[in-house]
Image (cartoon, rainbow, N blue to C red; front, top):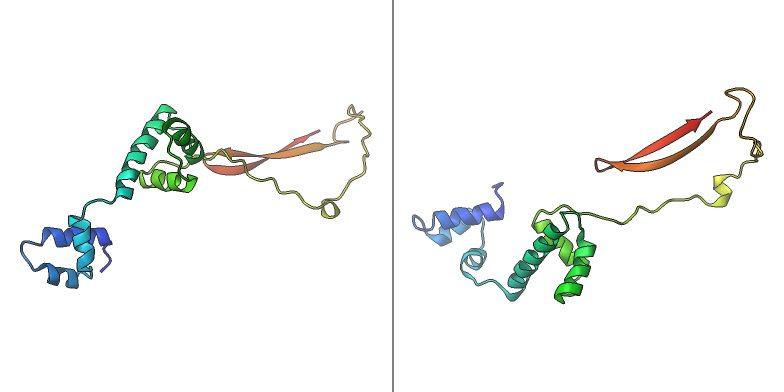
Length: 158
């Protein structure tokens, strides 16, 4: 079977009045204990706590115009609500609510060691005004984030 566990459990639940639960669980490859736990057990204290924290996360997320990530939400939960939990837990809860991960951590710049980077001689000697075009070119590059992807931008000036 290629159905998820949740789909198989709901199928057992729907057919429980027409067929034996033991047979349904065996045919659909679901443990009976999993079936009974899923439909007939009370939620744990951790589940209830997670539901309360999810409501607070949603409230904070809406207050900040949907532009806040797990790090800042963790800080606000501790500061305003006295709930001190890990960033990973906030991230997991946000992921379960299908809130997009927003990161303000800048990417690390990668630099080469001096022996590999090469030091070039100063041929221009700050004489920026040249007599004719195409005698001296200068360039610089940077990277920009647009549409969720990183792009390199290289500018060349004559």
